[in-house]
Image 1 (cartoon, rainbow, N blue to C red):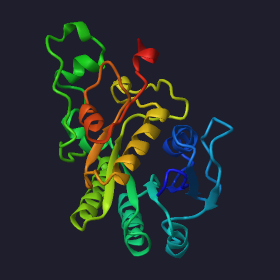
Image 2 (image 1 turned 180 degrees about the vertical axis):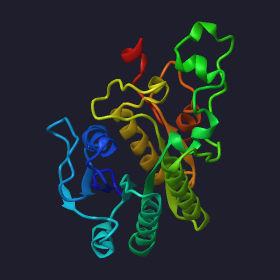
Image 3 (image 1 turned 90 degrees about the vertical axis):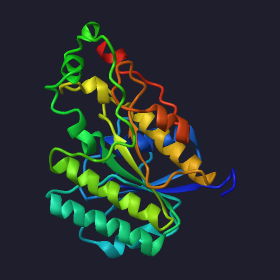
Image 4 (image 1 turned 90 degrees about the horizontal axis):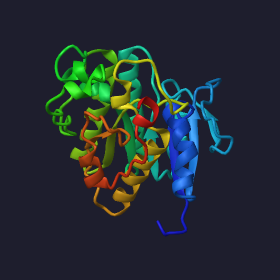
Length: 267
């Protein structure tokens, strides 16, 4: 890739809350991003910005492997965002996606959706200290802030959603084992409004869509430099004042540079 080359990106499930942010903010970070979005026919586009890239392909990833393979041709980066119920079908779809990438474009960079829920057992439910006090925002009652949950925290899911994300992480590690490039994004709380949600301790996991795009852009830049630690799972959280997740390692390893802080919403 030269400085003038287009970066051909495929978003699998790109009409949702994360994908709509990537389509909005990645081109602002680098105008060479050319984004194609594959999503189910009739899926609602959650992008709020009228300038978000809207090159859409109707695709049921689970059912149409042939078409999936066709649109994977020549892609520089694939971002896997799609979801499906039930857990068994979701994991089967994940198998299809990774097998198809290996078949069609094995040298591409894969950024695959995990979640903070993959390690939910380390902090959830918020009924143990110090997380209970943090969730209630009684920060003055804390003598010491807890050590951030490391990016090396192994999956410890508490439900099916976390289990599906742990499965995605296992595929990223399988790619690393055969010298292919895949990163698991432990997304935080990303929503289309980039605002508050009425969920316990949401401010600790909040991530602005722009910061999610900065993460993906950082992954790609690190990949191009040949410095990406394939198989890694990174927490993707904004630069929140009251953060319980390790984003310093994400900053140090790939140059992630989040710009937003949940306290502008909650403070």
